[in-house]
Length: 429
Image 1: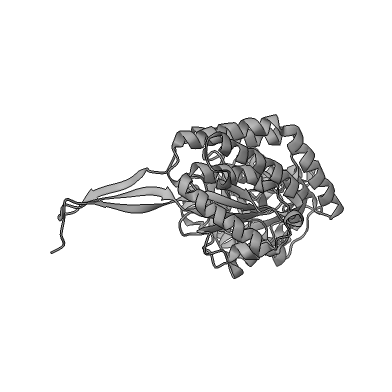
Image 2: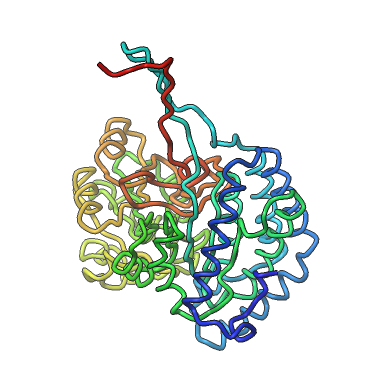
């Protein structure tokens, strides 16, 4: 299959590889655009079955990637993102099962109306077309992005990071075999068969084939895509997430929410990176919350007010307020109530996910209304910033854009619409 082809086996350069992928994608898109929901679901069910059946080979491919990543000095957070085990492979398969149960957005009527002229107009959801997904480290994105694009009627060209090449190839093969079993073109899901970085540049220029680029990775990748892409971009930017502990927060809730938001998994984009504490709550809440973080192995960096409370807290600089650590490190600042929290987030935040912990409904309402992020939360861990937890089955990323889609990008967000106009020989006077 094409997904197994390596550049050294074909002798092709990056431009030729991407051109061939694009031509096959454009052909496959014609068939997928009109595929039935049942055919798409059959492909997904079979892919989920194959992922489970091939879990040993997927984990073996991942072990090869992990070995190379360790030798290359990949940090602990990225190694955690790269790792596949029995539970994570089952999670990928279960994610496909979940997508099967979700409504197919293609063909849904968004709205309909009639004009005085007698014209009947409706807006109907349709696939975007051919989507390029560029991502780093996380091989589960291969399954999530492939499945979401398939169910939403989009052909996808996947370009995973070089560190996850073997894992992604094994997963993509299962997806393609699922398509074949359902009678759909295998080329509806393609993996760029090279680790050559030049392929990324070719994708960004592939306006003849691609309708959308979705980058999912660190700042360096996102900034390159934004600077170079000639294809429209739906970006997943930094997860510089905040938790604000208000003066009216219950101590036990604040301690638990902050600990979970930071330490459940430090390498995910929904992990909290900055803790804000209302000055009113410093005498009662700061030390217990910080104690829990340190007990869990988190390094704490704070401003002068926080450091005055605990000698274990290291000094924070302006660089800390803008850093997505993806590591067991958190920066902590004292703020003047909900106004101070909103100002701090507006100054330093990335527009991803921010949470308030409080029993004061008025303070919560102000925070939820005035913090301008894709996801705002009340009394909940920021680690719920996830398409699966939102009931979307999975996500292709968390969009920090304001146009088209914002927050978890699931099936509906991977569609656009067309206007269908019906008349009866209607003429414009």
